[in-house]
Amino acid sequence: MKTLRPSFSDADLVAACRQGSAAAQKQLYHRFAPNMLGLCLRYVRHQFDAEDAVARGFMKVFQCLSQFEGKGCLEGWVRRIMVREALACLRRRESLTLHLDDYPSGHPATDLPAADVLLQAADLLRLVQELPAGYRAVFNLCALEGYTHPEAAALLGISEGTSKSQLSKARAVLQRQVAALHSSSSTSSYAYAHVA
Image (cartoon, rainbow, N blue to C red):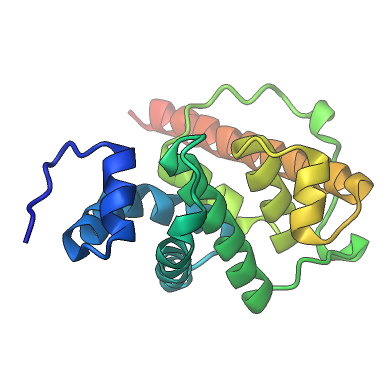
């Protein structure tokens, strides 16, 4: 059996996978799985759901590898499949429709002080995961993945206007949450300074 080099090119890796090489399939999985798990975790709330989405996504990657034309990068192609699979998992677990009363509006984000607090990646992921499913899906697609509103609307089965609205509301909610984190960290720093 042919052993694959660790730095196998995408084209060679795809060709070997198409020929049924288990070693190539394993290498493709290990090359992209960690990033794809992180991607799926932004859409779904639980680790096991993200792992399920990744597993289902890789099954589709291997089934559809003959459709990869090599015109773009392999990672981008795999990523698009994973986004679709994460959205399918999200639809199975949560409703993507959001009623106005489902999430408190609070004050407009523009009324909040500037949030210049440095967030850890885990904190930001937690804030994104706390968003209602519809907000979270559109925010991930448009703000993080670079999809246009027409593309996001088509993927989610919503109107372009709804996509724009959901993104705007998601940003406002995140800005309020970051400002709240900033306020609580300022208060605890102030209290600590007066105790010391």
